[in-house]
Length: 251
Image 1 (spheres, rainbow, N blue to C red):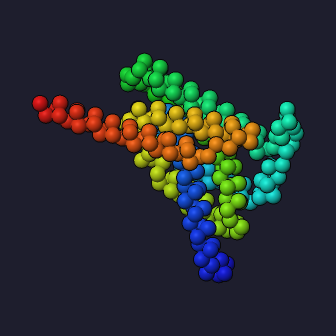
Image 2: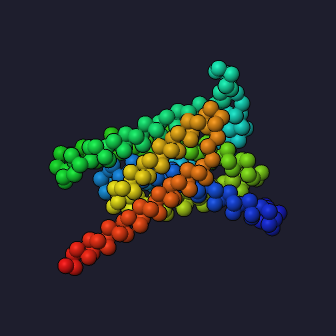
Image 3: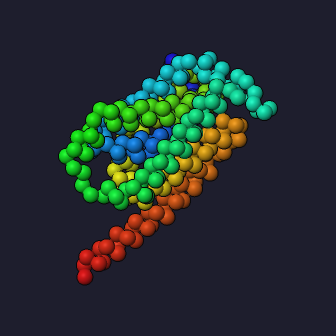
């Protein structure tokens, strides 16, 4: 252990892996934030903690089963000359689930949202706080956590040789997710246009996962760069709208 702590190469690898794990966790945070927004305010923090906690547990469990993880990359069967591995199957179903869920949430936000803009009745709030809705959302978060965790752990295995370094990087990155999830979720809730952009980002991630299942690599950097540019533009729009509203109120 002391040899690891005194090795500068280990610290460099740890820093790089931690940064990469945090970046890879962005789509996870967005997905959790959007699903949690469907819950009443008093249940959102609990759902965030459970969802992110499950993300850490799934990552750590996968790290401690490295031989099984590496076995997932071996082809199980072939379809039309295309080798299909266990990892490909997980990515395919995860990508399709993300495509469906993000598209459904966009439909709800754009088409249905205006019809339910009024405050909920007592009966509606009672149904919303039911355990079925809460655990249904936790279940959906758990499904996508496994998909994102698989990608994250395979990346970690390719970068670092020491499992203790991988575990430390995962724990720190999940801690950052836990801290960032609430402010990101609240910001997305306050700005519906940002929420639609975030959902569009999840559609892109779902498409990338589905393509990756068929060995068509889509660099995540392109997706993150496109989303960052869109968010910067939307940030300028939000600022411009705020200035117009302030000017109108001053008249």
